[in-house]
Picture 1: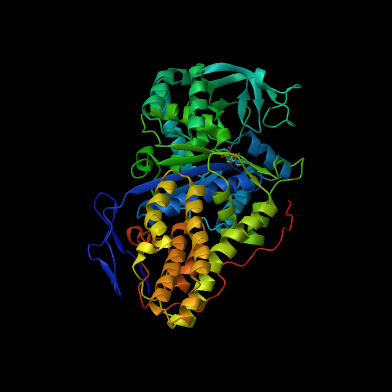
Picture 2: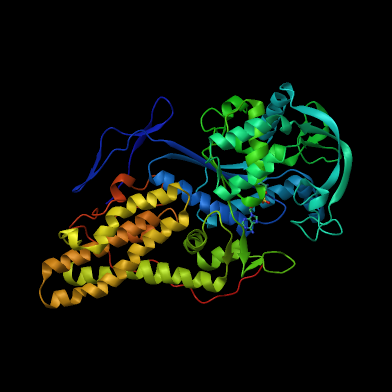
Length: 555
Ligand code: MSP
């Protein structure tokens, strides 16, 4: 049974389902109302090194959020990409003996390869060395310049090339090491730079945080930013001398634009249609402001303070929400090259597959909190929840359906007495709220609770006994509820484990692929009681192969 929702573009650019509802057997798919738009970004990752598990983590979370929005019927745009300018990248390329652009092309291709392996469905991959981006950066710079918000001034201070940021002398470690890169010495800079008048936006920023309390999330991060801003904002330099790798300052080409001023604008360049001539007006026409910038907590200040002030200066609307997630550790320790405990996402996904990784990181770690990766725990959780929990529930139930019901979905009975139906009736709404709040761990946890209850319930109800005593109606009711529980769980988990959900849906007799753009309508399939009686189910096959014990992957 193929279920698709056809859609057409309407005048204002929104997507709308076709007026004709789509009928399928005894089930009616409701046409959706006018679709809303939902756009989100991951950070644009530095190409100084291969992608690491931290960048994979943000991108897996962003993809699950985007898939959920699509499942609900929104038109979605997911932006990811790479940040390719600045001293850090220039030095890395030099160390490799490569022209910077060649180096950037290689690493950007690695990011894309990893995103494919992780089953990320991105729409735009923004690269800051794209010449179209240069046009946008120039136009934006000139707007801010004309506004009187840029001036030349002598910059003196300690610079961390790895952070691409000036550091306060007070925050340095003894011997002048960067607190975030304790093996790297900061460098003294004394040169004229162009500055952005951040201080001018102090009051406007404070008002923004007050009037839009959900602008920065989670709450702890909002408090952190408000405390920082309350100390008083100082202007920051947005150009560098003696650097070639970047866009020239339009009013003084001896200077190069600071990498962060350039990179944040990559979010806007990404919104241009692929063949559209670049201009700010065109870039912000359809998708700006984005609904969500998903970032790590270390780059919050750039996104929640500098970026809104830059946009205010240029007279552009602000993004709707900035959500900062926590940091990942390995076996309780910070990951670092010197400790030799960097988790290589390529090795992990090649060994265990994308659904397993996505599930562990999104279910086990609350988005916004720090979290740990241990290979033992990873294998244990994924086996318990996906192989023994979800997979086994389907397998056991399908065998019984073949044995006692001729391989067809049996007739449901009155579900009032049925604990699975009671849970299932509430679940769609609860899970939708969790996804909307970006509580992906809760969305998974709530759904897993239904699976666990269903696995207990099989044993309590002992359908094989009901068959022996000839209680055909009760048997049918129990098997229906079990099948429906596994279907609902697969549907609600599909943003996180799309491949497993697809296999489950296919074994339940649907011709559905959750990796396609519009799988099946949320209003219908997030409800309890959707499986059509009489639908032929497939011969059971394992939907999720048990993972083997740790292989202790290190890069
Ligand atoms: N290029 C800038 C972002 C510019 S956005 C316009 C940058 N790049 S980065 O590659 O260094 O970091 C990208 C993201 O990876 C950040 O959100 C950062 O928080 C995240 N992570 C880096 N290490 C991480 C962990 N160990 N754990 C979780 N996320 C981590 O910053």
